[in-house]
Length: 230
Image (cartoon, rainbow, N blue to C red; front, side, top):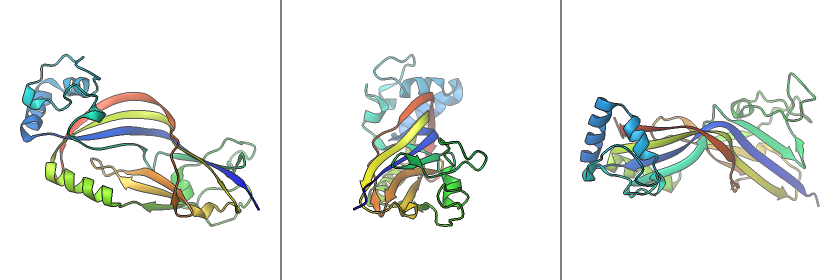
């Protein structure tokens, strides 16, 4: 019986994103404050781990309650994802890269963009003319439907975005049959604020793979006020 060890990872520039619902009064206070003073105070407040921030925030406009933003009482959703258009993908079978660099066949570390793989422009080491490619699909789970309903209900949202660079997804698993790249599906979901397609999961043969966690470096923290549906 064949036993193959598979490694799949994605990397590039992405984000940790946290969406938190605000009261109308809190939203309007922060909106007015940022219009007058800029977004710096909001970014300082939203990224603090305790009460270490310089701006005086009235009680009704507090939304962290002394907690890190990911633990805020009004949190609606949190995810750590990379954009479909920005990601590169690495796939190895028994330690051997399945892709070939079209410009340098000796480059063992070549990783094509996920977009190139999904639209059929990647070059494969063992099957250079093969047209069977890694697939792409969208997710629409019951949890996602519930989150959308909550965003619609709450309407007034502040979003924390930590821009990160590095590895966002890593999965290693074994299969008892021959590896088939067409069984890999990259699953995307839209960012609630921007609508950008983000890589939410990766599956093999219909089973979601466990993301063992990547390794990224933070490049900057930003905050955005927005109203869902407007």
